Image (cartoon, rainbow, N blue to C red):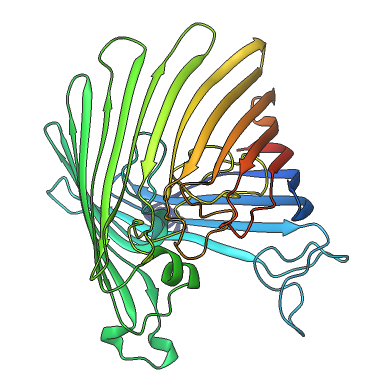
Amino acid sequence: MKRFITLALALCMVFGAALNASAAEIKASGNMWVGYDYLNVDNEGKTTDFKQRFRTQIDIVASEALSGTVFFEINNTWGHAAGSAGLANIGNGSGGALGADGVNIQTRRAYLDFLIPSTPVKVRAGIQGVALPGAVSGNVVLNDDLGAIVASASYSNVDFTAFYGRPYDAKDNGYDDSESSVDVYGLIAALNFDTITVTPYFVAANVGEDVNLPATLVADKGLTGDTQWYGVALEATPIENLVLSFDGVFGKASDDDGGFLVAGKAAYTTQYCVPAFMAWYGSGNDDDNEGRMPILDNGGDFVATTLVGEGAVGPMSDSVLGDARGKWGVALEASEITFIDKVSHVARIAYVRGTNDDDAAGLDIENWSDDDSAVEIDFTTTYNMYDNLDLVADLAFAATDFDNDNANENVDHVFKAAILAVYSF
């Protein structure tokens, strides 16, 4: 009997050790916020919304060479039930109406990370965030979640990245496979020196004839046929506390005129704040509706101001004045302003003007001619109430001057105000 018990204990120890050795470490992180947003577009009406969002990322780590990640998001607009007839409270943003129950979980990311044995090459495969370089303020061409395979490696002072992604595919609609998708290929090389980092990149997209693209990409962004982008991001610290940044990118769709965006920024860290000067120029469309650079998503990740690009800290009102393409602007900014412990501010004033031709199609509050302009003032305050909890107040006002060729010629100003509580874990 003793021998049997001893053998049983030994087997339990062996199996326990095996299970422990194969067990993965689970890590969770994310944030949750609840906020109120007010937007007044003069002569176009007012919107007021209470919104909330929950994001969580779960990493399943087997070792330094292997892990998996899933990233979920839940959005709710109070009083809102999304979905068509018979499908109430199903879909993005639903579940906020009376009764609350909704099916609205979004799978933002789900991917594997692994190292190729005996090499420095790391591979990430699955739905993931893919961002092209942006030293000044994000990248206008692509910075979004995307089904992709990304391989990266470092050699000496150079970091290499190559990727393939498929952002759109319409073969389920009965189209031929070879003409129903968009396939994207990219190469990025970051050259790191003592005081400067230079990151050139190249991206190509093969766009099938039968792709079911979003209407905005077809009508406004010119993503057709074979499209290519050539870009560079540069960041330098020539002296202590001074950071100089530059972005330049040129993109061209087949049979269409190419377009470009260039931007520069100088920021200097002082004891009291970080003052900065930023300027950009994005080519616009001519009277044939060509000349503005094509992009792969909504273009809002190059944040020029709170209202130009996705610069809003509050729950909504991103890109109210469109993105930075087809516009030029200059801005003075001061960030990390602190007068009271745990309270910081960001202040900005900017002048923005359009670069599209007066006869270009689709001129509106987002797409401006060279006779349309605005002066925008932004102010954001963050109170770090606890280590993991921030209270944020976000304000933006733009005094616009739209020409009579613009569909929104009667809009004289835009005002946005938001307040939200953000819990990070």
